[in-house]
Image (cartoon, rainbow, N blue to C red; front, side, top):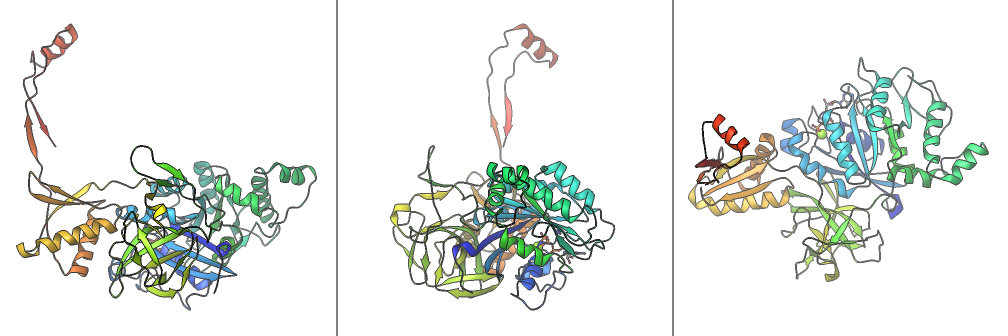
Amino acid sequence: MSYTLGDIRNVCLLGPGDTGKTTLTEALLLAGGKIEACGSVAKGDTVSDFTKREREAGHSLYPSICHLDHGGIHVNLIDTPGYRDFYGRTLAVLPAVETAAIVINAEKGIEQDTRRMMKAAHDQRLCRMIIINKIDAEGIDLESLVAQIRDEFGTGCLPLNLPSADGSAVVDCFFQPEGADTLFSDVKTGHTQIVDQVVEIDDELMELYLEQGEDLQPDQLHEPFEQALREEHLTPICFVSAETGAGTNQLLQIFERLMPNPAEGNPPVFLKGEGEDPEEVVISPDPDAHAIGHVFHVEIDAFKGKLGVFRLHQGTVKSGGQLFVGDARKPIKVNQLLKLNGGDHAKIDVALPGDICAIPRVDEVHYDAVLHDSHDEDHFHLKSIDLPRPMFGLAISPPSDNEAQKTSDALHTAESEDPSLSVEHNAALNEVVLRGLGEMHLRTVLEEIKDHYDLEVKTAPPSIAYREVVVVLDFLENRSQVHLAQAAQHDFVKRRVVCD
Ligand SMILES: Nc1nc2c(ncn2[C@@H]2O[C@H](COP(=O)(O)OP(=O)(O)OP(=O)(O)O)[C@@H](O)[C@H]2O)c(=O)[nH]1
Ligand SMILES: [Mg+2]
């Protein structure tokens, strides 16, 4: 399908592990006609968990970029891992989308990581929506979950649809002011609540609606609806069962008619220059302007090598063209442009501003690289996002002396591809320490190194460096210090051992 900027919707699914993001991606791809049958996480045949490691693990380890065309729109849907060890990879996708859909498991309700994801999306100024999944589960109380969501995240969180009376389907509240019986509340109340919330953003509409009692149609509400999303005045809540497919068609309709296109969201902030005071630059999804893309994810493909997955924020990129990576003087050739759907790749000729694509076989590409087609944008970079710091470390040594260089190359390549991985060399101990977000994170990275380089590195707990520093302190002068020192049976402190 050919599409224009206004048809693109970039949505990422965020949320704790097991909320059903991968299963929901599958259900949406089915509802959008991209696949003919749903795979399952248990069977290891979903589109988005396509790597051997994910299929073995039974959960997502990497962000997965999928897409579908539905009702005239092109949805780039990014499934992200929910486990904390992979939060760096998950948060790295935020600058690529306008909409963060935070998925809540109806059985578990709001979890600690739901809050973390709501905050991360807020910090990135994304339009947020909440998807309550697993509405088919037994013994759940959806009415009180909605009350808790509104209590915790504000009264601007309002359902756009409601579960049907028997819980097996989902009933729209926004597009139709009246509809079938619902499990709690009713369509009319749901409709009024949403319209009331949206018109608050626009004085003229408010007057039409409240003082003249005019019925407002969804199309009249489009602009204020987008503004309400951008300003976090409204956070829509939607219900689905990824397992049964209930609510997935309604969700696609919501993406189509209500969620922002690339010109309607809050754009990410780009900065020009380094140091203390870089200048903020305004970029726009103008197809004729210089091209500016941001690499938010790097994949290694057995046949296509390194794939730099990027969001094009401005300008147009053509297959066969040239791009600069960061402030490199020499351009790289765009031999191919790809659209990804999990592990499937389709070639395209042109990437439009706002779209998400990948370029294969480019060694220079790394996470956070800015791709551009003019030296005017040499020193542009994306304002840093708040990523978790890699704290968990393992000392790494090569399997044999003659594989030392290969090990070093593999570690540094892994570091350039993963936003929350660092390689440190402790010269005093002559030790290389790989740091990540947890044991599972580092294990996954080492397995990737084994797969890609046929290299089984040795690991050990990092050594602790002790340093003894003599610190001569002044004699204690005032009475309270003397008193304190006497209590500790010292009249002055001679030395202190500092360990780091
Ligand atoms: N009953 C029910 N189970 C579901 C539903 N959606 C997903 N599941 C199950 O929940 C489990 C987790 O689903 P996933 O799709 O892997 O969850 P995830 O959010 O992608 O998990 P991570 O990749 O770890 O972040 C699987 O066993 C799914 O079959 C649903 O709507 N109803
Ligand atoms: Mg998953």
